[in-house]
Image (cartoon, rainbow, N blue to C red; front, side, top):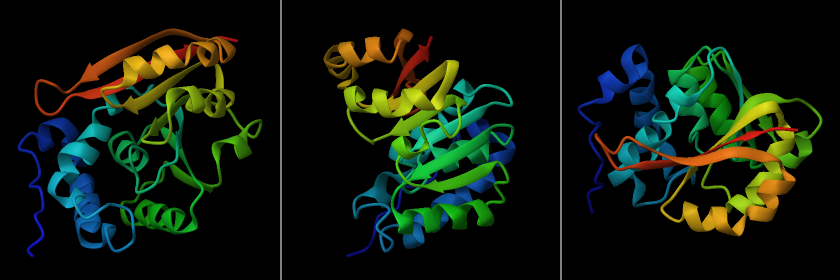
Length: 210
């Protein structure tokens, strides 16, 4: 059976500008080795660009200029590696508990020349009190009510959560009201990005005010 690989979108250069080639290089490596290394499933090559790379890339304009960011459960590099490629001005910590995925992230840092990336092996909770960042991201990690208590302590006062979520985000917010209050998340809302060019990307965005 011939593997179906999704073609890169026509708008890639407009979206990524001078950084488009890094996304191409990243995608090529995932197409060639991602399934073998257990980073993507067998159906993902057919939707790698749309479902994963572009979905992550749409978050890039929301990152603060010259800011600091922690990406929780970076896995195969979504959204952390994609954001690092698109936003070299932002210092990004990739937090990932699995050793083989950390090895992949280290390799991508080197291959893509991402000097703004630091890979940290472990769970988010292990870094509570170790540092604070201006923004934190997560994608396909866990439900919002579980995500809030493990990410809020990583943020400085006024720091921002940017979580890539699916169509059920409104229900997740309703189920997380107690956790939102405990984490002191203010002015939260859901942004829908990219619907004019591709599948819509939903982002939960909220600010921590201690």
